[in-house]
Picture 1 (cartoon, one colour):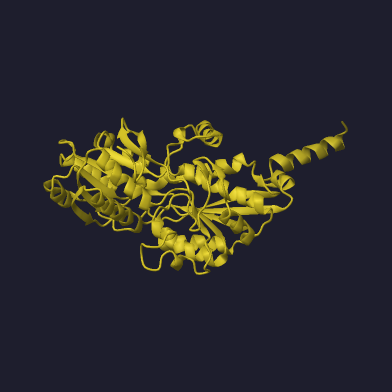
Picture 2 (cartoon, helix red, strand yellow; picture 1 turned 45 degrees about the horizontal axis):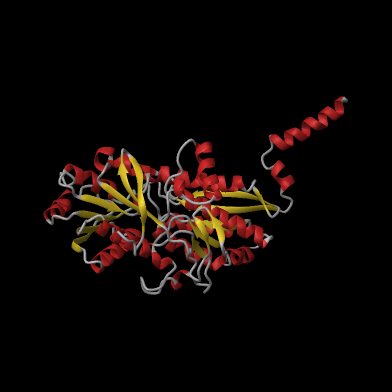
Length: 410
């Protein structure tokens, strides 16, 4: 090979392997489509947030990074305050505005916290930008009958642009109450963090528990920024419940409640704690300590564990995630992956870089072969698949016990 030919070949190799995006551009002649993500990536949310980010990246990798002739680029944003380490409404609004203002942005995956979704939903709705959550479970974001004006107040355009591929809290709270009855836990004290998600799911649990004939001996809300709950827990202990149900997320008081229940000897007599998906995170075990949580804490989650999911798509996600990241895909990572695959499928079906057409394609998702099973979106943007899992924390891990549901048989 002559010298000048070697030089040209070397230059081409340099372009393909060193200069970012050049190789992709050759495979994606139509340009770039950006997908924005937004959830906390600080404090107690680092394990969960990292797992979700990895799952999104894996979904793009499985698509080879190019869909319908467009290179797919993920833009990860953090909606947590560097001061508090928890989600911040101002930051979430800024994140949504960034996505809306970016002409290449065709989808917004967020948020983790339901309260944060109330901030970004009207922004993406006005812009006609599809938003799909990997974790929000507050029912009023999509369903009427909860807070006044919901969900229409989040839809200023009058059109549905917000979707979720997992079940909402009206189903999860009811499933938790039914499971409590099956576990023989009849006297219950309910606690919540007074936030949209925590109070919402605790209220549903409370109502369904009473309907099922369980005795709710108390219901208290706490400040999510508090760390000392001993006075309250002394009152709870005196009520002699079989179960304390806590509507919390990992950074809103649930960890401290469990720690202090252990310190006050509340678990010694057989009392248990049950929480929702907001506590389903390795951070719970790490922060509350295995001594406090082991055999004392039940958790519910709107979906089956990754290794229990049916179908080849689920197996591919589970096996590839473990192989790539050397750990189990935790918590909401499976829905972060599934949300991304729904968007990528919509881009493929739309075939063009157009927000309205991509939104229409998502809205018309039918019989989608997701990792949680085949599902469609209903008129509210909710999934038709509602399987849920019940866990016990044992040996520092989340042990899957059974499939649960509002109408489950004991």
